[in-house]
Length: 220
Image (cartoon, rainbow, N blue to C red):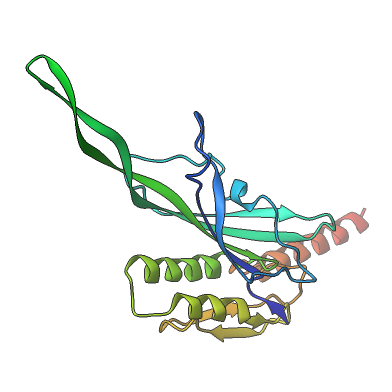
């Protein structure tokens, strides 16, 4: 049995390190807090979940999902699924100046401007199930944004506690606890991924072609 998710990480914009160029990201929360003995925590994850750099936006962008594959020193792959969305924040632009009878006075009024900061939900796993990870992160995002009456801690705990067979071709049905149902189809062998596409006919045709070619060659 293998863990479905090794780590769940929340990465946000770092307002404490402003700069003239692109901003920086920082880890806000991570689950679990301690590293697994067999799977170290991926260093620099805040860099990989924002390939284009951490930048504020004047408009709310649509959520995006992608997967980054990291390879450790032992040549083991770690699949980092990232769901990024933007949250509204208030940017204080200082005081407002008013001109009265030729004199400039500071009124003390502050001009708020709404900006949007990126935030990423990251799931790190040694298993390659991008569609399952997309569904899990999408569910957590929906519960968070819509303030549903579901405990986020329970969702993340169920996600990190889920164990699935590494191979064998069996099916695993599980739930994060929000009325959802997730179905995982494990591969027959751990070295062959599950693609959802049948290749039996292709291999059968290739085998027949090789056989015909062999018979044709021996006839000469």
